[in-house]
Image (tube, rainbow, N blue to C red; front, top):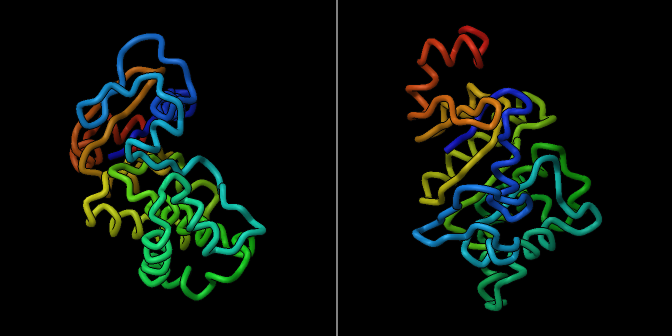
Length: 206
């Protein structure tokens, strides 16, 4: 699921509201039937929502493995946490090869993969991502979006805010186009990708 739109449309504000970092003045936020409006961030995490914020947010002087284990900081099943971190290292070969290295030594794309894997350590029902392709090379962008598709196939819901609108729509089951804080278009990713007005206004006319 993705939210696209021009700069200033309110995309990141939606995520901040969802994650308890912005005041909600009207409307309600519901997740799995529960009203989570106004909950603090740790309460949101405990309900199974993981966040990968805009820009790289790894702990650069800690190892890849240590960064992964920090993703499970609210869990108490320590043996299972170690098992999950080992499994994620096997699942993402780039992390397995560098699990003992400082996270700051990874490339931008590798750090983003680490952030995604760290989110999975929470065993979430949903992952919320803000601009996952920001500042990455085309090769790294492709790697990140391939990883998102793989993660979606495991049953985890992924909500992304993304300036790379075409790429976001290509992988989205559902998508929304915001303009000046209002929902202007919505539909499947494919339908919006092929919508003449959306293509003209937000996708460069192609």
